[in-house]
Structure formats: structure tokens, C-alpha cells
Image (tube, rainbow, N blue to C red; front, side):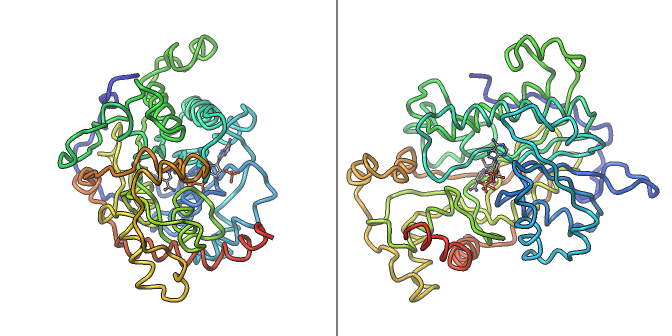
Length: 404
Ligand SMILES: NC(=O)c1ccc[n+]([C@@H]2O[C@H](COP(=O)([O-])OP(=O)(O)OC[C@H]3O[C@@H](n4cnc5c(N)ncnc54)[C@H](OP(=O)(O)O)[C@@H]3O)[C@@H](O)[C@H]2O)c1
């Protein structure tokens, strides 16, 4: 596993602190910068697109999706986020591209100034084979960053995860009072201790930093090593969000939303002793857009956490106290860890909890605030309740269909 800090970046020449939302150096006659957002069908990506389209700095947005049949669904989500239909028509375009294939990426990066690389597998259930997550995450990151480098993009913002920071052997038994910061990395030296998703995010982020520093044989193999852009640098910023909640713009079924929907549906036998950081998707999207142009962000990784962390017991309490009847199936009993381990043997979704069972962490979100002036606007309670309301609004009928 690579060293535990991102490569030291070359800082931009100007050391004065620019307006955080100002693009680096646009001319008034230029068309608005084109931003590529990968994975436009995703929960976070839709909010990043919405934030870009509502930004006081005008941007054009291109998004890659696996199937163009989902364009109408994305447009409808953006209307849900109050994006005017005329803006969607004039400022957003769609292109097909899959992280698992080379096809489409060169076209997707043409004329692009900034990249928001957000797409990565984030399934609600652990995969049968961990490489089903790892290969698209890592190879997809290589494809996107390599194409970005060849196209001469100004900066790539990569959505990594807190999962690339705080798992594995080095973290087992660490003093919970010592805050987890951006210098920490998930330790892959004992792979059995690291869930597949955390492996996929750690390896994908590592390969991104390697590419940003200049292509190397270890990251790209011999074919890539012989490419013309070998050795040049790519400006990279990495965002490492904790669990993202907040309002969905359509039906969502990712791992974090599952933690609420399992409670609301009455599928959880009790409350596991699991604590997790919370950030609202609207705040997380703001940080992605801010990091895209803020001079100080280049070459840095930022933990993205809102007000702090919650235990699942606290989340259950929030749901029960604020949603009344709609939360009547939310459990009230905390499960002993030994029982959760037992349940995980036959309930795959419970397996996702094992690496966090009983683990208390203090997560520092200072760096994004102090370096970029980012602030979260939504409390943990607001983020949880907004996610729950979205599940009740969008997932209800689909759940019923799935069960019938
Ligand atoms: N939600 C969280 O709590 C959280 C926390 C930390 C980090 N993250 C990271 O944030 C990013 C977005 O997650 P999310 O919450 O928005 O999850 P999501 O809704 O499941 O979005 C995942 C996106 O990745 C796309 N994708 C998956 N495999 C792909 C492939 N082989 N080729 C092309 N696209 C592919 C999906 O496309 P399809 O719709 O076609 O499947 C979807 O657009 C991910 O990188 C995730 O690791 C999420």
C-alpha cells in the first residue's frame, strides 16, 4: 500500500485568497466553462449537477451515464431541485460511458475544463466477488483521469470516501479520542479487515494520486506507461465524504439510504451499535463545486462531514420523534454486538455493519472549513429527516412492487 499522505501538490502561483466560487481565470468573452460530471444518475452527482447549474458562476455541464434511457429520469430529478427546464435544455448534455469500458471517455472529455469524477459502484448489498466493486472503481478512475489528462483539463475533483480513510488493521483499537484527519488512510495490509467497498475507494483514490503525480508503471501498466502524457501532472482534489444523507431527487437505494429504509420498513430486528459521520448531500455538493475552483484546494484531500456523527440509536430516536406514525416500525431496542454478528451470517445488509460495530470515532472536518471556508448548512437531524422523507416519497411504491 502506498504512503499514507497524498503527494505534495504544486500550489498555484497566486497565494492571494480568491473568492471561493470564482473560476481560476475566465475571460468575459469565453463561453461558460464545461464541467464533466461522471455518473449523472447518482444521488450525489444529481445534486452536484444542480449546484453547478444554480451557481452564480455560470457553468455548462456534461454528464456521463451508462444508459441514455435514463435522461428523462435525470431531467425530472433536476426539476425536483428547482432547476428551470430552460436551463436544463440549454446547459446540460448527456453522453454514454461506462467505467468498465474505454468507449466514450475521449469524447466525454472533449473541451472540458473541470471534471467531477463521482461515479463508482456503491451497492446496497455486499458483492459476491469484491472485484465486482474494485475493478470498475479503480479501472474507471484510471480511464477518467487518463482521458482528463490527455484533454488538458484544468482540475479533477474526485469523490473518494471516508471509507478510504479509517478502516483496516492500523485503525483497530486506536484511541477514539484522537480525531481522524486527512493524513489517515485505510490500511489494506490485512485485507480481511476491510470491506470490499472501502477497498474499492482506497485503491481508486491511491491510483488517482499516482496518476496526478505522473503516470507510473505500477498504476497504469506498460501500455499506459508508454502514453504521450507520461510524466505530466494533473491537478487533483479529493473529497472524502462520510455518510451522505439529505433529500433525494428520486428513488435512491444506496447503502446509506438503506440504513434508514430498513428501519422505516420494519426490516431491522433492532438497532446495531454503529456510529457514522453525517453530511447533507446539498452541503457535500457545495464542497465539490467549491473545491473545483478554489486555488488552495489543489492537491489536497478533504473529509466532508457536517455537524458530526450519530449512533444508529440516535438516528432511530430522531425518526421516531419527528416522523410519528410514519416511523412506527423503527426499532427501539439496541442489539448486542454478538447478535448482530450472528444476524450478519444470513442477512447480507447486516454484513456491511461489521467493520463499524461498536467503533467510536471522532472525525475532524476542520480542513475544508479552515482552508476553503466551506460551512455545512444542514444539521445531522435535518439531513436524516430529509433522507427519510425522500424514502417515504419516492421509494414506497417501488418497495411494495419489489415485495409483491
Ligand atoms: N452516499 C454516501 O453515503 C457516500 C459516502 C461517501 C462517498 N460516496 C461516494 O459518492 C459517489 C456517489 O455515490 P452516491 O451516493 O451518489 O451513490 P449512487 O447513487 O449509487 O451513485 C453511484 C453512481 O455511480 C455509477 N456507476 C456505478 N458503477 C458504474 C459503472 N461501472 N460505470 C459507470 N457508472 C457507474 C452509477 O450509475 P448507475 O445509476 O448506472 O448504476 C451511479 O451514477 C460514489 O463515488 C461513492 O463512493 C458516497
